Image (cartoon, rainbow, N blue to C red; front, side, top):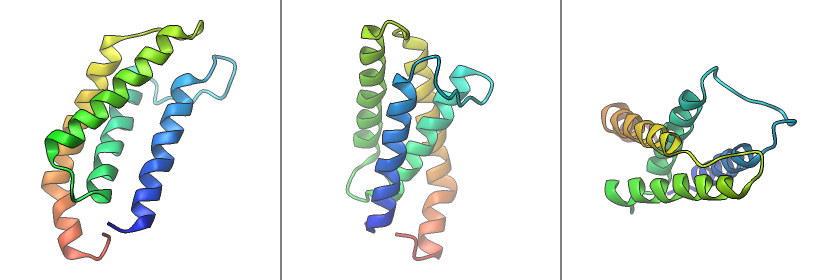
Length: 117
């Protein structure tokens, strides 16, 4: 795995974490529907994780991102301006599923045809 891809994955992970815990008075980045934000974020995370780590199998990637999704919701439960939502976790996992579909249809081919990773 090349280090720039790993770094990009962790940078995106940190950005998503920061956006998940921001207050309502800070910059609001949205695609217009909260669940769409979740799905896109976790789709991107799955794709980046797949580029970044050849050692992790699909189950490990899904479990890792599921733990991350629950971690965000658990922290949000304790924030006075946020709330825990299982529907957010469902949207996250739909995003992971879409990331999986992209990776196994186009991503693997991209890696084989280029020297991305």
